[in-house]
Length: 312
Ligand code: TXA
Ligand code: MG
Image (tube, rainbow, N blue to C red; front, side, top):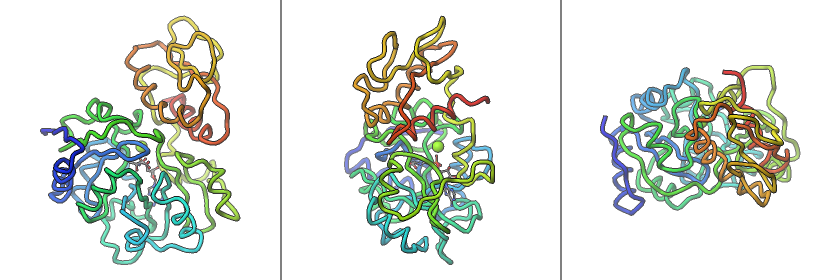
């Protein structure tokens, strides 16, 4: 398949919207990571997402819409879900709500779960694309399944060139981590830590449950081995060993790369996947990573690092 690299101009956005309207696959940036978009109502387009990513199972996909008003066409929002949407949309939050009857969404998007994950992305480019396309866009992260998520168009080129129709080049993503996912099909439950810190959610809700640990996989992005670079990953490293590439955080000596020399968690989140891609390209025997504090965005950073380090 021929892939085209599309500029982020108005003409480029129109070209991307046309690809989606014709049932094609087009990657585009959001504030979290690059997504691989398809028309969420088109079964064959959605099936092609799974094929292009090499996703092992039909995991449900997040549906991107322009606003809460659009989201309510596809999902049923209770008081908690609406409070979250009003507080944090547009932004790095996905809300899983009961699927509305006759939503028109492809069954592959929801994996037959009876619920749907909805998100309103914040960047002008993503908003522009949603308005031009004028429909729901299903988009998982635009990386081959199990690999490091993409935060630049180059990362998408490396992972999916020749497998999708287009890639909109909108520069690096600001948040750099996937959205936080909250389930609102019953009492609000944190399904995935992400770009919106948990502390912000807790300030908005009277109660936020943790996802069951050993139970069913509630958000399949929660597969233990995920975000994997080629080399094994060693966590909480205070010094580098022979043959290792050392990713530091804060004022640490001997690091080859640093997520944030000043110890800023937002900067570290923004840089995380780019630096993992860079470490990957250095052909290390092992990638070791300095300790990251388990607060704010550090929770999601550590979640991604633990999955990158998990046995494969
Ligand atoms: O920031 C993001 O969320 C990015 C950008 C592109 O929006 N997307 C993303 O998609 O990270 P993906 O497919 O890599 O992760 C989506 C996660 C998966 O873990 C999936 O299982 C979960 O969302 N999910 C989607 N719909 C769900 C549902 N109905 N119930 C439970 N989990 C759901
Ligand atoms: Mg992903």
